[in-house]
Structures are given as structure tokens and as C-alpha cells.
Image (spheres, one colour):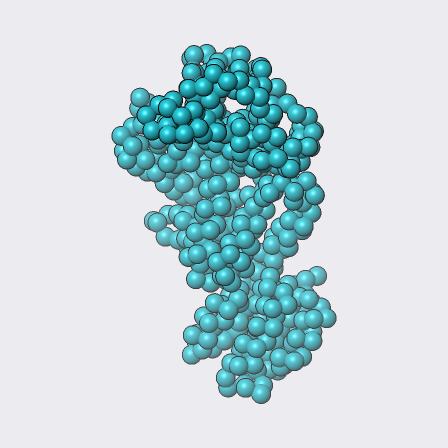
Length: 459
């Protein structure tokens, strides 16, 4: 049976709550702040009700706020429900901003209070489970620089990383945009014998084709207009370490030839140079496109594919990772709350439902950005769907006041928002699929699927 702490100096209200809630909870009662804090430290209840007007300041709220501050300092995940009179609504709102979970105006309706308490205990249980999940992360997960997960697909990824880190062979990481390919590459490097060497990432799709060869291989003085001196490329910068070729599927064929030569012979030539330069670097590549399709279309060399993909790691999209969504959401919430000095303690029940229901086309990157936005915009201690920029109910209303709120058009609202975003991005980029997919933070195959889903013509 869950323990409920009732902090109330009115003995009649104490008796009413003991009698009315005693079947559902183990009810502890305190009449002042000192007694309340003693009971709190002894029993550590997940939920408590708090009357702000406690002796010796029964007509004010100083003792109530002192009690609230002490509880939040000791266990900020505690769900404190402030019981207040209608004329004290401003104090109640201040309490919520200070960390209280909710407030309820007297006179008390036991049936209404029971609903609020049930919701509070439910949320407390979810948050406790997520804290346990976070603390139960494997040592490997903590070593991988922000890669977290307990779902079966991610545990398989972690296991593969353990196996391949010590094997000095090329790795190809595949997955949608935002799934964490660079983090995985960095984790492999950090757990490899090359960890004392440099980890050098380069996004092959972000550099114009005429400049990419020079960025990778460097150039000699006079190699082209503006080449005023010798410059080392990323390959040489990665000497003794790891070179991460992100979005290698976008690499021009002319550059692919030179990368293939390096993988075969371990030598490079700078642009405008003739000297063979030996480079000792491991190659890890990543792509979010269907590379086998690119091979069939003549856009990617098959022999290079076999060289870079000695071992392939497939990263699952966030929508296939189950409860990892909540695990990551809580991780980002704690990170950004500390970074931005915000007293945000968790997610409301409605926000948790929305996190679980969203399809996450932008994957972990989208989740991170939404949570960061929510922490910045949150006006209370608990993030609501509106803070996450979710449209949740019919008529465009965003209501999270009831744990049993009816989400009549959740799928329709999500699809409508998805369609509007895709259409706006396509119009902004004049139908350019590559630029549109980059703007939305998704892969081109995913964009094509969304265009087909919503009836947009493909170029």
C-alpha cells in the first residue's frame, strides 16, 4: 500500500482525509512543518498533501513554503499537492512554480482529490522506474558519450560495439538521420586501441563537391586558385586515430576512387601533389541512404561498399526502441535543467503519453530538441504537451488537466502536423528533396515515404 503524508493543522480535515483515503493509502498526518519533515524523512512518501497555512504562521504561508522547500531539497521527485482556499490561489500557483506537483482548492471533494492523488502516484511510479532504468545502464552505455538505451535493439548495438572496437577493420554505420551515428563512431574509437589518437569527423554532404577532395586529402601550394600553401587534409589529421566519414553515400564518385585507393594501399596523395603519403587511420563510415540502391543507380561504387562495410551496424529508429523514449527524455530533461538552471522536475502524465505516442521522424535529435525547448518554455515544474509543441486534442486545444482526457484525434493531429511540415519544407526549398530532408532532419527515403503517404508528387 502506498504511503500518503497529509500535512494539515485542521484536525477535522485530517480526520476526513484519514477516513476517506485510508482504504487506498497508508495515511500519515502532521499538524506542523517540523512534524511533517520528521515523518517525511522517516517514511519517504512519494506523494503528500500540504496546507500552506501551518503554525506558527497559520494565517500566512511562510511555514508551508519552508516545508515545501525542505521536501524539494531532499527529494525533488516527491509529488506535493497543495490544499488551499480560493482566496489563496496566488500562493498555490507560487508553490507550483517552486516545485509542487498540483494544487486543489478547499472545500475538499474526496472523489476529485482521489483522482488527483491516483494520477500523482502513477506519475511517481513512472518516474521512479525511469530513475532505476537510468541508474541500471550498463558501464558500456555510460562510456559511450551519451548513448543510452535498454531496448533489445540498442543492447544488440552495444554488444556489437564491444566486439568491433578492438578489431581494426572498417565499419559502416547505417541508420536514419538523428539516430546517433557519430556517437556510435566515437564510442568505437574511445573503446579501441586507437583511443589515444585523434577522432576526426567530416560530413561528406556538407562540403561542396569541388572542395571535398581537398578537405579529405589536403593540397599542395598552387594546386588551384587560392591554394597559397601546403595544407593537410582530414586523412593526415587522423594519423594514428580514426577518420569518421559521415554521409559517405553523398560522396562524389571522383572522390570515392581516392578513398578506395587508401583502403587498398594505405596511402594518399594531396591535391596537386605526386608524393605518396602513408597514413595509419581507421575508417568508420556512416550513411542514412539505401546504399545498395545507390549502387544499382550507379551513384556509389560497389567495390568501395565492400571495403567500408567489412562490419555493418544498423541503428534502429527511435520509434522502434520502446521505453528508450522515456529514458532518453528524462536524461535530456536532467541535462538541460542543470544547463539552463531551470527547476523542471519531470513530465506530466499527458506529456508522457505524447512522448510515447509520437512517431519521432527526427529520432533522438528531434527528442533532444523538443525536450530542450520544453525546459526553456516550461512555466511549472512539470513539462506539458504544449511545451513539447504537441497538438493533442480535437479543436486544437491543449489540455492536460485530467489523467483521463480523451485524445480523440491524436493520430489525425499528428498526421496533419506532419503533412503541414513536409509541405512547408518542400515549398521553402522549391521541391529540392535533399535540402528538404536536411531541413526536417530525416533521410531522403523517409521523406519519400512521407510524400507518398500524404499524396505529394515526387520529382
